[in-house]
Structures are given as structure tokens and as C-alpha cells.
Image (cartoon, rainbow, N blue to C red; front, side, top):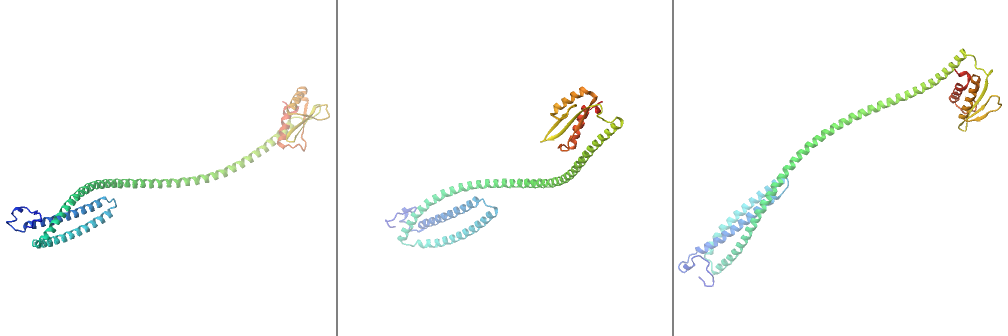
Length: 325
């Protein structure tokens, strides 16, 4: 053994007694196994990352199935890579058999590989920490996935409730539409009946106007008949032996104008309505049944027939001798 290199083999005290190559082979195999373990760890971490990504997705069931398909394809690819790694490991074993016969320079390379192995161990520890972190993240994502699934179930339940409410609303809308059609039909019927009622009301108003006109005509006829009857049973109204008072009545500038010509007077004098009644009442009290009241309505009086007739009848019934009981 060259004194420039450190002997890392077990039982190196017996190296002078036994020049076997098995310790070096064991070290080489340990390096190979560790490389395989690290590669397997990397593959497992990658596999977990894919599972975490698969669980983290909140998409629909169709996309989840597609990702499962991709994951299966990736798994097959990893299996193929593992098979290739196993083949490379077998080739590496053959190379290790050849390494036994290599020179001290190759042993130095093995020492450098050992240093790299230490680095790989450190990286493995880091990867182990990352794997634990990934596991915790996977558990957290699993919880989140369960929560999302629960929310999805709640949303499905809510959607079913909304569909039921929509059906109820549709039925209610249909009932309201039917009711609206019935109301519209009833409204059209009411409008038609209203039009008929308006037509009947117009006819009734016309009939009422005709009846009022007929009533006025009948009142006029009755008054005329009453006068004729009075003439038949009573002596004719005459100014003979009576005190004659003439009352002239007209409408000037919109206001009624009353003038009186008292007995033994030759001209008319103007009076107000109240003064006229006072004067006629005094004459009635003075002359009693000898008072003859003559109503004068000029042709240009501006009065209607009913106004002239009402005034004449009122004055005669209150003051004229012929109309007193």
C-alpha cells in the first residue's frame, strides 16, 4: 500500500498479510448502492410531487382522470428508467470487477468518488428534509382536497335545491300566467259590460231627458187645464171694480228689472224685488180681494218662457184676488 493515501478499509491492520481485493469491491458496491438509493429517492420525490400536483387540482372529474392517465404514463416511463438503471448497475458491476485491477491513480479517483459520496450524503439529508416537507404539504393538500370535495357535495346539494325551487317557481309562474289570462278575459268581459252599461246609461239619460221634457210639457198642460178648469167653475177674472196694479218684468244687462204702476198712477216706477213684495203686500192688506195684479212681460224682455211663467204664477198666487182662497 502506498503511504501517500489513507487506507479507509476495515481491518487495514492486516493489509500487509492479505492482499485481497474484497474490501475495495465492498466500498465500490456501497457507492453504487448509495447512488441507486439517491436515484430512487429522487424518483420517489418526483413521484410524490406528481401525486401532490394531482391532489392539488380542483378541476372537474374529467381533467383528474386525464392527469391520472398522465401519471400512469409517467410511472411506466419511470419503470423503464429503473430497468435501464438496473442494466447500468449490472454493467457497473462488471466495471467494478475491472476496477480491482486498476492502478493507484484509479484508487485516487475512488477517493474522490468517496468525497462526492459525502456530498451526496449531505444532499440526501437535504432531500430527506424536502421529502418530509413534501409529505406535510401532501397531507395539507389532502385535507384541502377533502374540504373541496365536501364543498363540492354541498354545492351539488344546493344545486339540487335550486333546481327544485326553479321548478316550483316555474309552476307558480305558469299558474300566474293562467290567472293573468283569466283576469284579462274577465277584464275584457268587464270592459264589454261597461261599454254596454255606458250605452244603456246614455239611453237612460236620453230617456230621462225625454221624460223631463214630457214632465215639463205635462206640467204646462196641467197648469193650462187647471186654468181652464178654474175658468169653468169660477167667473172670469176681470178688472171690473178692482184696484189694478201693473207689474212689468224684464231682464236688462243680465239683472232682472221690476217696475210697478200703482192704482191711480199713470207711469211705471222701478223697484227692487224686496221692495216690490213689500209694496204688493201692503196693497193686498189694504184692498184684500179687490186687488188685481196685471203682469206685463215685454217681447224684448230677455226672459225664457219658464222664467216668465214662474214669475207670473208666483206673483198672482201671492197677491192677485183671483188666486186667493
